Image (cartoon, rainbow, N blue to C red; front, side):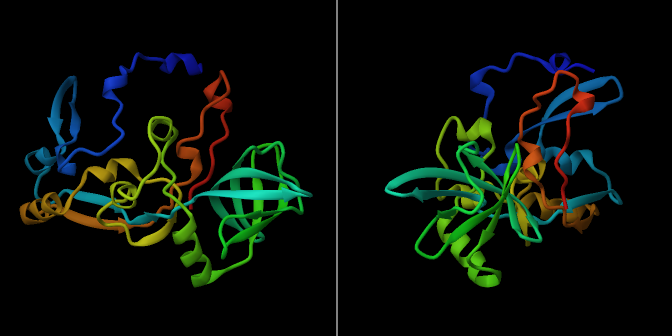
Length: 230
């Protein structure tokens, strides 16, 4: 299976950089056997039946994108980091520019938050932060921004609205570095309407990793290595 088998034309005007308002007015493609129809998400109230069950991912996106500096002698260089997952030494992270990062150097993100590079691979860094637990969470909330997917980040910078827009209404457990995007289209009125109809809900926690928006670089997609989720 080749990567170019999935090529298609996508007009710029159809690339959303903000959610629909209300959220549940986003477009929905409904497939019923051989029949396909264009609907809207709020119409799930008419599509789903009493006794149906929706599985909701209650993961919460953390502000995993950090901008910092590293110092070598008198030279100060900017570094952009996107946290991916926790590891025993700290956090695995994507970095720009990765090539110039060195094991042992310290990246400073704010007056409170810094990290030492403890390992480096061809694709990412391992960072040991100066803070842990609640102190780390507070410093990350202050210094970090929401890790928007590249197709959005290439068209506008992250801002304060993303703290709400890029989070589901049922987000509870912090840990994801990307949103479970289909869930973003559900809002409280829709959830109440579905519950009133007799649709049941089950919550799970699956922290979405950076693999959800990393590019596929191989021509044969069967050889693409996926990042794990947890």
